[in-house]
Image (cartoon, rainbow, N blue to C red; front, side, top):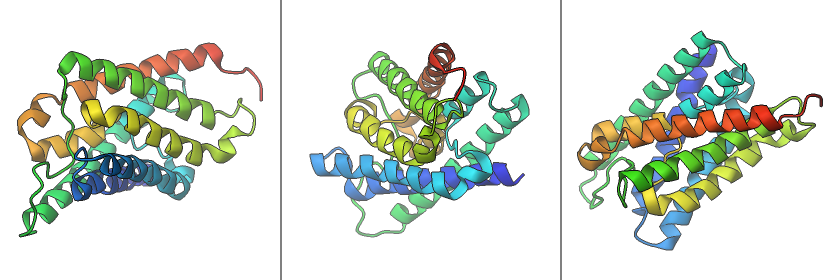
Length: 224
């Protein structure tokens, strides 16, 4: 149970700090807000990797959990439970953000929870989320692999920095999800287009995660 709770806490931190930064900076209105949001998501992952990595592996993302499961890194039970607790963590974070905005009399932000939406249509959004998630999960699988030399010593840093890059590319198109849990929680409170487009941010990352797992199976070194 501790590892499930760790995943819940980690996903809460990622969603609250990442989406919270997007809300506070009004992400998308200028370059500085986009860069700030990207850095916030990346640093959140770095922080959690070194906080709960030894407990649960710090997936804090159902797409990563799926990739790890496909590669035989966790059991089917853990895969399901990780995903459930990740979504719970994201829901709690989104609820906190919605409450903060709702009780702020000076709030003029229209996107209250940092929810995702397909700015250029669902086909565009689906392609973006599949490709970016595949790249991100591939980094996770590679840097944490025990057969890939000493790279796992710096896995948390590499994963966090790669997430910054992923967000710098994806924010313009979808707000960047690459994480179904991070999208489900905010979309529930945001409603509207975010909720209508939610399927893209579930299906896309799962497909991307599965693709990354298949790629890693092909290129993974057999020995350290």
